[in-house]
Amino acid sequence: MIDFLDLKSINETCRDELVDACARVIDSGWYVTGNELSRFEAEFANYCGSKHCIGVANGLDALTLTLRAWKELGKLREGDEVIVPANTYIASILAITENKLTPVLVEPDEASFNLCPHKTAAAITPKTRAILPVHLYGRLADMPALIGLADRHNLLVLEDSAQAHGASTNGQKAGNWGHASGFSFYPGKNLGALGDAGAITTSDDELAQTLRALRNYGSHEKYKNIYQGVNSRLDEIQAAMLSVKLKYLDEHTARRRQIADLYLNGINNPAIGLPQPGSEGRHVWHLFVVRCKQRAALQKHLTGCGVQTLIHYPVPPHKQQAYTQWGTQSYPLTEQIHEEVLSLPMGPLMRPEDIAVVVDACNSYSVDG
Ligand SMILES: *Cc1c(COP(=O)(O)O)cnc(C)c1O
Image 1 (cartoon, protein in one colour):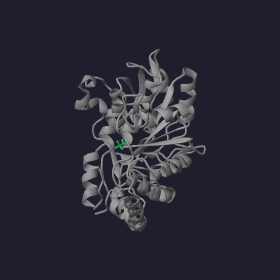
Image 2 (cartoon, helix red, strand yellow):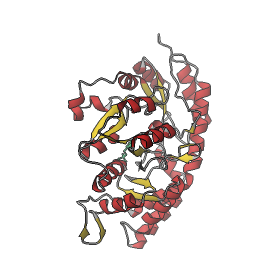
Image 3 (tube, helix red, strand yellow):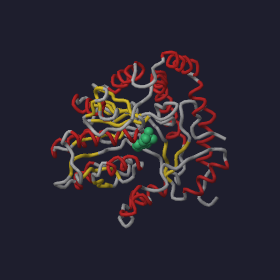
Image 4 (cartoon, protein in one colour):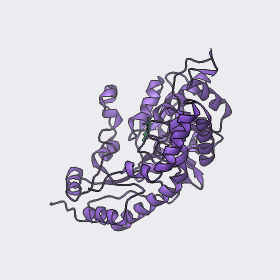
């Protein structure tokens, strides 16, 4: 079976370094908010090109706490509208509703799966205060257009970069376009910890300072609490793991791009719609997502050929039980995408022969079985 993503093997390629880093933390006697975290924060800010990086417990908290910080700073108020793509992973939307802000779901641009600047412009109302573009599957949203739109309407921009570490447009990376950006280092992400972790990047000093307090009980100084904060810290072990893995991120991304090129050049089955790399930017291929009208049949065929696939995502947020209040709303393009998408195996350790098996399996699929 060709695994969808062989995480164990990926971590084994730098096992010695991971073990050394782990031992260093154990021996330091200091396990939360110490040198490992400061070091990783500096490295990741530098990688993204932003002034600050604030480590937090996971990607959802990165998004939730940024919106919360803007509330604390008086830039957002309960009930304000935040524009977000309807076809995102539910975390982007949970971050909005957790803060009692109102998500305004907007259909994506079909070619990129990302927020469409025109549909976004049409969704702006006097209550709109922020846009939350998601760089879905590793492709940067149309940030030049979205930033231009946000500037004209005086809106905050929070990027959801959980799937897009290192993706760029005109040399400017995810995490360095909006006023802030949320990252996840969930193990399966392009930069993955060995547990949960996340971070915010921003070049706004005031926001960075507020986030550092919010993640730590609302406190800058021990026992002095200025906000009703939370405990959402990135611990020393995970920070140390991430410093090791960050060194390999660009190499892994380059390999993902090679694999994507081989898929794009090799798969020529008219029943399978291929993703578009986008000419304007540098896709990092967190996921290689194809579309097929008979998705279940294609998935079954691929499984039979020894190719593991997954669906990102089977049910759109507005159809989830968690949001029954939106059950009657209709986002036809989003719903169609959720019925047709299928993610092929993608990971930096795939061998040429694995890729050939996936390509052949896709090309041997026929609608009539
Ligand atoms: C993974 C992911 C998140 C959430 O990250 P966690 O670390 O799992 O909390 C948010 N948004 C998107 C688009 C994601 O893919």
